[in-house]
Image (cartoon, rainbow, N blue to C red; front, side, top):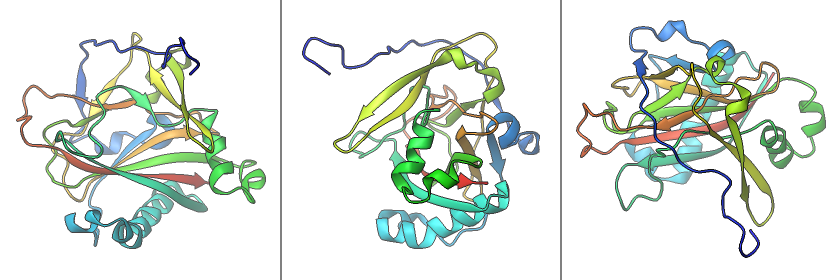
Length: 237
C-alpha cells in the first residue's frame, strides 16, 4: 500500500462460540446445502512420506483427489491448481491458520479460471464453476488444532470482508468473516487417514462458501502438532 496507508482492511476479534462435533452425523451434510461434506472410507496409495516430495504429491495424490471430486460432485472436469501442507510447529513453512477465512470470493473465483485456463475460460464460465478444497490429516488422528467450519447457510453475505493479495503478476482475493448471530460451526473429531473433508470456497450457481479456521480445543494435548494437507481444485459442471 502507499506510504501512510494501512496494510490491511480488517482486524482480529475473538469471540467464544460453540463448535459442534459432526462425528456420527457425516451423512447429514452435503456441498450443495452446507458447502462442506465429510467423506469416509477413502483409500489412498499416498502415505506420509509421499507428502515430503512435491513431485510425489502431484503424481500419486492429485489423481486420487481428482477421482474423488468427480465421484462426489458429478462434475465433468477437475483441475487441481495447488496444495498446502500445514504443520503445527514453530519452524514449519506453513502452520494452521487461527483466523476465520474463505479462500476465494465471488471476484477471485472467476479470476482463478482465467488464470489457470485462459484459453477455455470464456466457455467454462458459462457453466457451473466451483472451487473445492480437499482436506485430510497426515498424522492421524487429528486432536490438536482441529479445523472448524461454518454451515454456509448460517453466514450472511454481509459478514464477508474481501481481502486483496497482491502478487507480481496478479491480484487475488480471499475473505475474512465477521461474527454474526446464528452462525453454526462444526468440526470432525479425531479425523483418521481414510477421511476427507470437502470444503467449498466458491460456487457460481448455488453460492456456497464455507468459512473455516483452525482452533484450540481445550481438551486436546496442544503439544501434539497437527499435520494436514489441503488440495485446491477448480470443479466444472
